[in-house]
Length: 82
Image 1: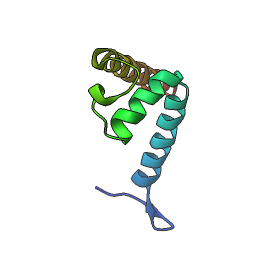
Image 2 (image 1 turned 180 degrees about the horizontal axis):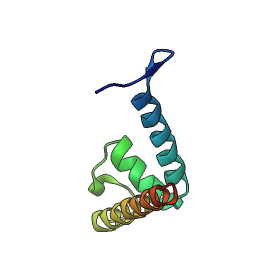
Image 3 (image 1 turned 45 degrees about the vertical axis):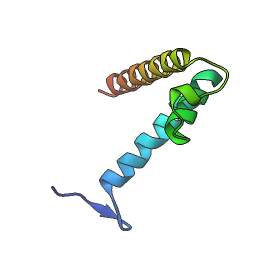
Image 4 (image 1 turned 90 degrees about the vertical axis):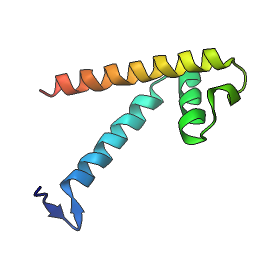
């Protein structure tokens, strides 16, 4: 596969960075509770059972709902630019 390089950085690296920036902004738009559950589970690598102030079931539901919201926002963004 051919990729152009600009200043030693490939196009796919730039696109990956842009996608990462978009995702960060979308996560920041979530409620604090949703952000906290995602952060604790994915970045601090806590199990859902180890997330404080809620049951494991509640943490799983919040994470599932948060992922669904993020997917919907990404799809909406893609459709907007087609």
